[in-house]
Amino acid sequence: MSDSLVELDDVKIWFPIKSGLLLDRHVGDVKAVDGVTLTIRRGETLGLVGESGCGKSTLGRAILRLYEPTGGRIVFDGRDITHLGDDALRPLRREMQMVFQDPFASLNPRHSIGRIVGEPIRAHNLGKRSNVAGRVRELLEIVGLPADAMGRYPHEFSGGQRQRIGVARALALQPEFIVADEPVSALDVSIQAQILNLLESLQDDFKLTYLFIAHDLAVVRHISDRIAVMYLGSVVEVSPSDDLYTNPLHPYTISLLSAVPIPDPIVERQREAILLSGDLPSPANPPSGCRFHTRCPYVQPTRCRDDPPPLRTLAPEHTVACHWAEAIRTGELRPRERPPVFEPGPQLEPEPVPPPT
Image (cartoon, rainbow, N blue to C red; front, side, top):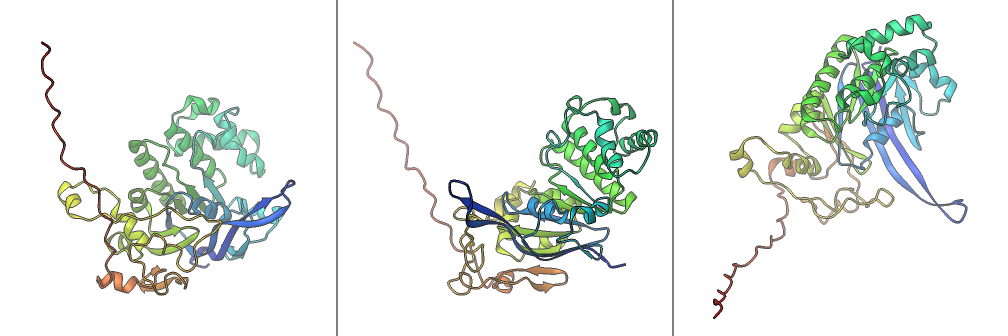
């Protein structure tokens, strides 16, 4: 049995842009995912972070073959599933499941909780009706919900409880791999901790492998063994969790971490936040060379604008896509100075108004 459960090799997910009266003219592509190479090991949690629109959720759905890859190769448990048809994919669906981001939209409001959680079991013909009811009660108890929740409907539950229902549904087929697509972003902070602790305990009990997608770096650090950082459809850094936070190598990762607040006012005042200039480029027309060079505080006139940097190994299990990562790490290359901040002039006191005569 291989140590790797999921292998991605130069995976591309492009969405065509159509034009014309009948939308029959292909004028371009939105390159949501453009050349991602990753490995997810059995039993680990790989965190996938990046700002909104960088392609995290698209990549997660492509691994589950909810999207058809435009290019590259997806291997699950030693089997190439890149272009498998529906009939060939059906038995593999039991091994891979998904927890969706929005617990308010991912549950059918017309169905009871018992029907929602038991639907995967019935769809795969894994038990009789009486057995399904018992399995649903067991799943609800596993995720911390009472058994009488079976007869209730999604609107009767809070956001955290709905997400627990989504987790129970994902566990119904006893999968080996789960894609958690920002499962706590729509929840309160106190509820986030409960869901994260639940996911960790389930991983230990059922030997699960997670792809945990998020944009909150503190949440990802808490639950992940390794972290991959995405920018504009490409992976720019992959590292063990602790090493990424103590020794970030890519300028984008450094900028992200500099924006994370630290609950220590003394440290917070002393450190310098790195501000990114400009807006996120369009994935329909990404920049040439390094895709981050239009906003990078360390950009150099040579190489950055012309040569796409490959993922290079600079430390054990730590890869980065940057031409100048060594110079940044040693301090030889410093970020550009920020533009001057406008400071208002002195405020003039209003002239006193003479009293009426």
